[in-house]
Image (cartoon, rainbow, N blue to C red; front, side, top):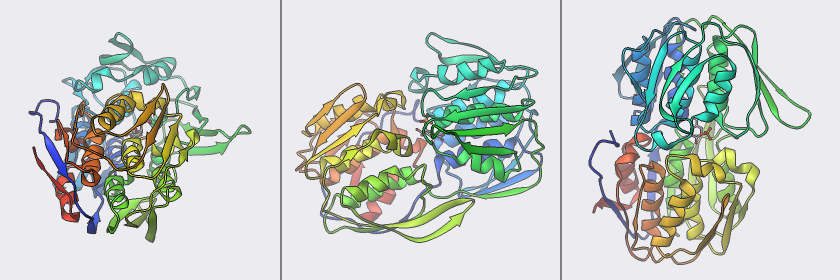
Amino acid sequence: MSASSAPQKLVSAPVAHLEGRVRAPGDKSISHRALMFGAMTVGETTIEGLLEGEDILSSAAALRLLGASVERVGEGAWRVRGVGVGGFREPPDVLDMGNSGTAARLLSGLIASHAFTSFMTGDASMRRRPMMRVIEPLSRMGARFVSRDGGRLPMAVTGAPTMMPIEYRLPVASAQVKSAVLLAALNTPGETTVIEPEPTRDHTERMLEGFGADVRTRKLDDGARAITIVGQPELGGNRHIVVPGDPSSAAFAVVAAAIRPGSDVMVENVGINPTRAGLYETLREMGAALSFENQRVTGGETVADIRVKGGGLKGVDVPPQRAPTMIDEYPILAVAASCAEGVTRMQGVAELRAKESDRLASVAAGLEANGVRFEIGADYLNVHGGAVPGGGLVTTHLDHRIAMAFLVLGLAAKTAVAVDDGAPINTSFPGFVALMNALGTEIGNG
Ligand code: S3P
């Protein structure tokens, strides 16, 4: 695991252009959910295209400790035999969420409605991240939590034998918090409603419906979305889930091609759900030559092959309301912005401070180390584009997206860029270096 393995320095050298065709790895958000919802279903769920990153393996291990059978049967092919809604057992050991916020928040929702006590921890990054955002609504429903100061892991969760339905308006735009409440709601009598002022990724709603849950979504007068779950449905039957490629992972190859004039790259099988596609809209506004080809529906999600040709990027203003649809893409957008002509202004991005690292600070430090001009505030980052000197050593802070983003910067800089630790890349994108090098990058051990 990245937390315990030795740091692995990586270096990315400048290259002329990228070319070729690659396939995006499985979607991380959808992979977590496929395992978790399969574990809550009576019957067998088979999954193909599952992301086999460390974050997903953390979810799989936790679900086994809770009594589900979760087996790998081939490459990306998994079989889950579930215990039914409300059927988890007391885990005989600590649930170790590794680096994964999604595993920690969604599983908190799952176990909150079970009348036993579980203990949850994670790696050094995860133990710094806020859990109060799920503790608060789940406590209102009846679960009890004992955490470290400020709602940090490790924590103990004692579930309620009978949960109370609530109506909960999200104070932060977070699909993880929304999902934690909706998953607790499945094993809660009555109707539980989550109101989200801004749309966040909707994979939970889509997939729960696919599993036969009663999910009702309506738009409120103020434009917010209300999602209601009717508790205690029978989730039964055998399901087959095809996991689409991850737009957040595909983003690295797409931006790598976009910032190198003369590049021509196709990334196949990328999920383009509008609640995830904000980066692609932004790249288009920046002038990127980007097209979605061969659009089709896979496992209830629209996917496309993304073709991108390099060059011609200009700075833009990215509106704050777009942030939830590209929340994981700001590090790589900052790299695109560094290579664009003019200034790119990213606003309303305070949530970046609650990710695997304080991503606003990590991105700013990485830009600084490589001679890129920027201004940073509590919730904004302005990046001044132009020729990138490079030559810096970037600190990853156990954050996979910081590592991948700055390796992409290296290919377009004057001098190679290094990251102190590439090991966290395995949490979301095992095979990143090989895939990028197949397109023409020169990423190697430092
Ligand atoms: C995720 C939601 C996002 C995102 C994370 C995955 C999910 O977090 O950053 O990588 O799968 O629900 P928030 O919902 O907390 O913004």
